[in-house]
Image (tube, rainbow, N blue to C red):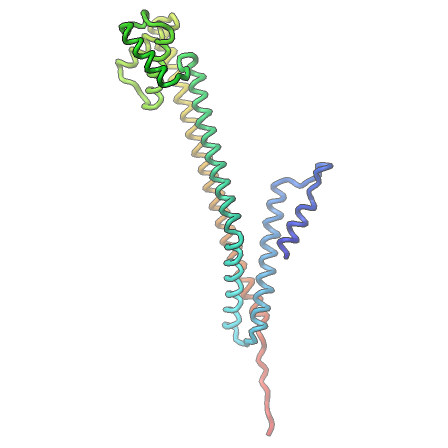
Length: 258
């Protein structure tokens, strides 16, 4: 009942018309404090009633009644909120996956932008067809068409990005293709490719760092939430036991006279 009352109070503070609404951080702090206090009050009262109605006058027995109330309350809460927690966890995982996917996609776009026209996205069958045409042309970059050169450049760049490096022969071939395609000297082609590789490496490192930071933030948030949940459960057990102690009946000695 106190939790429902807290939801009602929290929702009543939202004013979408004038925009006079507390911030999300204020909502979170206020909701957490209210939830903790409401649980402590509820468990304390529950422990008191359980011990009082049991009719026991033994402190240990009443404490066990209070702990039973605490255990049952959290068990029921876990069952009722299990689906909600699972749904929230699934949402977090999906959100993290979307973030990491966006980072990876952004890295790929950055690499494509750095590479320029030489990293055109082509259908695999087109790559095969153009590679075969390049073989028929004798493999000389100057004798190949622009599409044939771009197809082989894209293939070599893909291997460079996925494997991390290229053999010396493939690097020389890539330099020759770029030089022929853009009318550059071999030195200029090599410089341009080095710039593209450097930008691609930096983008990959930035994407990896962003993913690590996101994972670290998620782990820190999960650890903090777990610590707070443990503290709340511990305080709840103390409140239930104290309530049960207050609810313990006092044994009064009755003297009978013959």
